[in-house]
Length: 123
Image (cartoon, rainbow, N blue to C red; front, top):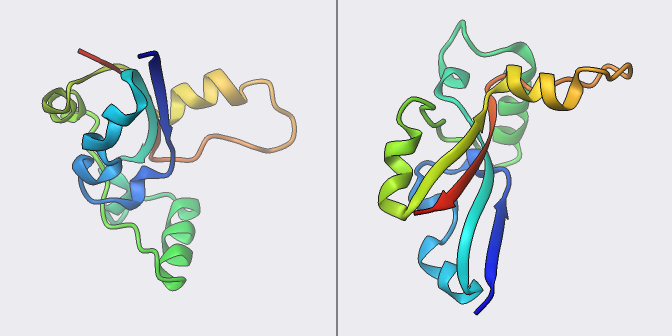
């Protein structure tokens, strides 16, 4: 079997990592070498910490029936992924995303507060 790489975006709409992706179904892809996903950190749900942009987005998706139920804690993410057979290789916070992908942009696009990009590999 070949090696698979799985990308799963917008997982921040889920409550727990076990619901992020049907991990038990990963075997149908062959040997999985890694996954990439994004998530909201828990600060997005703390009054006074959430940015206006993220609050508007949360309000909008809630109105259309897809409320975001919670975020993940970057400090405990590695421990949460380990039982799933994954090790965090990179967890880019908004500042890192801004630096890597938006630094030289002149069109006004910028990283979204509280959104992280994660790359995890199988262990």
